[in-house]
Each structure stands twice: as C-alpha cells, then as structure tokens.
Image 1: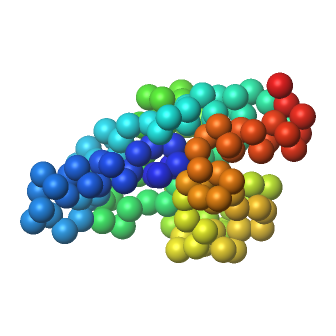
Image 2: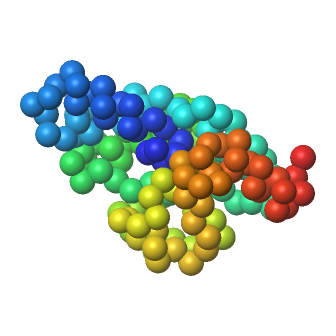
Length: 145
C-alpha cells in the first residue's frame, strides 16, 4: 500500500520537514489516513479487480511505530477503493506468509517479500516505475484490453 498505492515518501518528507524533532513522522495520528493516492493507482486496481482472471487483494505491512495505522489503512482503502476491496485487505508484518501469483511492492525484502511464493513486481524500479508500466505488463501477459 505505502509507496505503491499511496504517496508515503512525500508525506514522510513533508511531515519531517514540518516537525524535524519528530523521529518517526509515520507515528502521528492521521498519517496513513491522509496519504494521497499515487497517480493512476486507484484506476489500476479497479481495472485489475474487474478482470475475471485476477483475484486482487491489498497486502500491506503495519507500521510498528503507529498502532492506529491498522484502522487508518482500512479507512483509506474504503475511501479510495470501496468496501469490496476492504474485504480483501490483509495487514501483515510478514508478506511471505501470503500466497499469490504476484506481489506488487516497492521493496523486495524487509517484510517477507523475499519469501513470497509468486513473482514480486518491484514497483518504482526497473520495468515497473509507475502504474502504466504495471498495467502494460498484465495487459501483454494476459492479452487484456
């Protein structure tokens, strides 16, 4: 979610600049709830979720610095993607415990991504620098329109 669907980096930098004494900006109440969606992220998830061949889930790791992140991430998903995707929200500190064909993540390790059984698409890097490239990958691989 953070850095893939929503703009964690910008919010972190802005919060740190406004409050330089705060060691963990993500520990503030409202931090996760107020993250802005990344360009084309919402449209991409809606497109993929509409395809019959995919069963889209949102898998996100919690912030150990902010226990409110569980609620705030759930509310963010409802606000931007609706209750259908809320029912497919998984919050886990170990992403490698989950099964699937693909994991779209901005990190390839650190929260169990290295143990994920499917293919990890490294969002923000290489061939997956943005959502357009992610969608192009799936459209070509599965001949989607």
